[in-house]
Length: 446
Image (cartoon, rainbow, N blue to C red; front, side, top):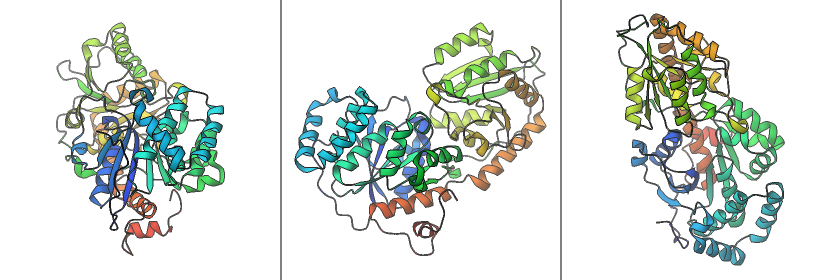
């Protein structure tokens, strides 16, 4: 149950304590966040996780079961718990920096006169009242809605905050809002060069406090790649090439273009597609597949536990994720699932869009086509289906790229140093990578 009164202060004793704010927790689509939390806990951090929404996924990732952080939920809608909201308001008026925060809020409300904006203030009132007094720093994932709640709560309570920006929040939040949140934050990170450059552009001089930190993958969580001794080439009806696509059924994933591309493949080329993921467009995609005459070649597995996802990657011959622009400018960052496919030496076809080219070099460790171009995607699929030797080469190169440049350790060292300094915990030992980073010897994005 969420706390209804401020928790008693817990002695610090040098342990870095941080409140993490997320839009929803736990979420299968955000395993990169769970990976980060779990490793920071192993390094001595103590977290309270505050979530704006309760989980909706059918499954939990095994990492969520290992995380020991206290989990608390804010009222998703203010009408859900008006008593907590009223108590937060009274507490803020009597004890917190309510008037200056209200001025900031009203300035925001004039530019964004929405019920959502009011809800963010109400959630911030609850958060500011119920935060453990021993916690002096907040860290938020995503700059949009959770970023607003965190910013208001920090202003109210006199705490500092930092942020991790990812994808949708970078490209769909108004420029004025991103700039002001960055200006008020102590520091921030983002996970693609594409997003990093955009945030630095909109923030002006304050953009210097935003750093590029790739998520990377903890390779210890994944099995070694399977031996790929039997390599289908699409010629035999009884031995089709197995294609897998993993991702939510939303516009920015481009699965509608994937279906169009599959429909353009030669009739004598034999393949099967497995899609893993839920989402608002599942019904529409199934109808599209029916219209295109593809239904008997596609298996829609819906949301799956991580073990089942990895098994599907191991069984497949080709991974495909045709990222494209979504509604209102939404886009992917660098989808973790591309790197997860690489752990199994599985060759990927994706697009020259967003953060994807930061990991995939065309015809070096994967295949890239223009976003939204179904004929080009179809040609790339046909070429890779018919060339198992090339698939082997690209898959092994993807694994090598992952191990060389996208391991988890470098990024988590930098986050550890930043969070430790902000939370007032024990600083890293001199001479360690984290201590070097805390001293500021690495330039932003280096």
